[in-house]
Amino acid sequence: ILNVEQSPQSLHVQEGDSTNFTCSFPSSNFYALHWYRWETAKSPEALFVMTLNGDEKKKGRISATLNTKEGYSYLYIKGSQPEDSATYLCAFDSGTYKYIFGTGTRLKVLA
Amino acid sequence: DAGITQSPRHKVTETGTPVTLRCHQTENHRYMYWYRQDPGHGLRLIHYSYGVKDTDKGEVSDGYSVSRSKTEDFLLTLESATSSQTSVYFCAISGDYQGRDEQFFGPGTRLTVL
Image (tube, rainbow over all chains, first blue to last red; front, side, top):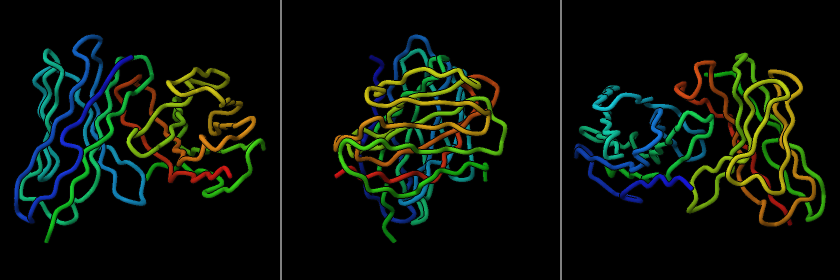
């Protein structure tokens, strides 16, 4: 059974702080790694799809890196804002149509 | 926003009754998925479809069946609902470039089995 782990499970940061969290996934049979942002009472929304070792993606203040050899991806948020409060999910794709989601990192940004 | 809807949005039913949830898309995407979301488990794949009449099981498929007779509709059926199937169910779609396309999620269906 493939396992995708995210850490930390939750964190609180002050407005303006930068933060990062980790997604660990199997280093074999890698096809793609997805990051999603999930606000309370809404549906998950895609942030990044990462496919190549060493990939770096950026969207505004949010960026992500990928290391497929060691099986991890980092998501960074620079200068956190209250509207960044959400659960951030990663999903491992081994190219079999089946995405394996982590349990998410729940971020709360305090004003 | 991707055109994806789910119906019903909320349902309360009793143990032993059949329940069907519907996912409808207007994007003509090939792949469709059903997930359930439970505290401590994140999103878990129930079933998915890679084309009309082409479906396969996910990691938590026991007690569920699916059908896809048209590109736009993917139905999830609980043949005989149990309390353990109380959950929030999300449908998702993704495009034709296998696996690397992001998934777009529907608004979710909250199902309570009494």
